[in-house]
Image 1 (cartoon, rainbow, N blue to C red):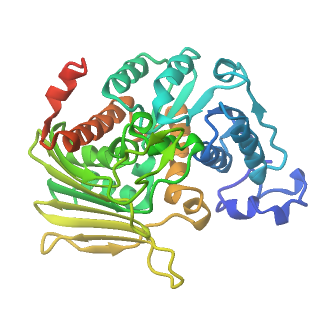
Image 2: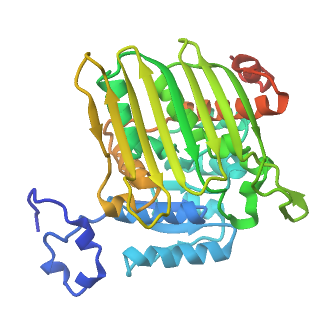
Image 3: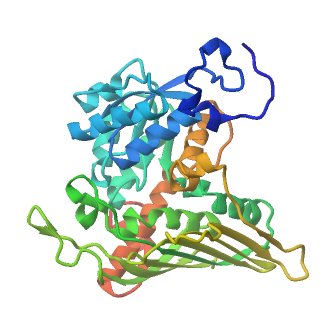
Amino acid sequence: MQRGKELRVTPYAMNPAFGYLAAEDRYLFAADPPTHRFNVIGSGLNGMEHIRVTQMEGRAAIHGVFDASGRSMAAAQKSATILDPAAKVIAYDSLEAACNDPAVDGLVICTPNYSHLDVVRVAAKSGKHILLEKPMATTIRDAHEITEIAASHPAVFQIGLQYRYKPIYVEAIHAALERKAIGDIKTITILEHRVPFLDKVKQWNKFSKYSGGTLVEKCCHYFDLMNLFAGSRPVSVYAVGSQAVNFIGFEYAGEKSDILDNAFVIVTYANDVRANFNLCMFAPMFYEELVLCGDEGRLKAFENEDFLPEARPQTGFEILCGDHRPTVVSQPSYPKFIQGSGHYGATYFEHVNFMDNIEGKPTRTASALEGFWSVVVGVAAEASVKAGKPVLVDDLLRENGVAA
């Protein structure tokens, strides 16, 4: 049955209440058969989110999962049946088997940060399309090696810096970089106030040696956005921060947590753009804010989830241009079923763009090189906190054996 151009009704198509309809009775609810098959490597919380949005996006199906934890694999297999009760997801017994299955043409890597390089070394040999979760690595040396692997990879190699696809940042990128609505960007401010790091298997995200540190693990998203809006290479990074509230005294397997829970970071770029980042991870909400100031106006965007019973705007967006051009005030969002699928819908559109990359369509996904620079800023910020002084990026690169 060939469908016309009617509005997609995906929320209804996914509703189990319509499960009584036979395939021949589905027109508005019909889905095109998937053209690709993916394996998910690492099936914790992020892995299950990738399974969910792959099924929602529809151009690919989840074929199998691999994880060092059998419990995680079983949970992922069960999760796959929520949207598709008929889903049969294979649980592999080795990384090599998951990466080299000829029935699969894409790999989504969601293992803990510190394992990314070892996984990529195996996955890249398959020649399959790769979506690698952020941060691409915990160290500059590892990130640089992954960048070199990606440069010669024969298929798509995309980094999971999906905050680019949150509705507020999609609008900001369009307005500031494509429309030049505020002229030339001169300063960038990003703020994140949120609850502490959530639980992970073996609590690896509570320890810098496994996560890369808070400013790499969590904040690479924001440093990627900073780099994107600045349009230039970072030159110096100065940061202060501490472990003031979260996980003080927390131990796991005899090790004490050492991650930062607050920081202020200032980044100077080669084109003289200045950026600053404000982090607090002991706030009772999820709140993000971006402020861009250009020579012709100011852009502000925010998203908020504060758990209060009275509904308040979850997003806000404004461009104030004085007498240069019209001012804009809006509330960017996606349909509810997309926005609720993870990270305000950003992961869903990350997969839309992953599929577009596979199909050869133009996208603005994060390349391995852009992923590398997001790690560089995070590592520099962590080093600056420890040293108590600014870090010159070229010096840091040379110390890590990377040509400046």
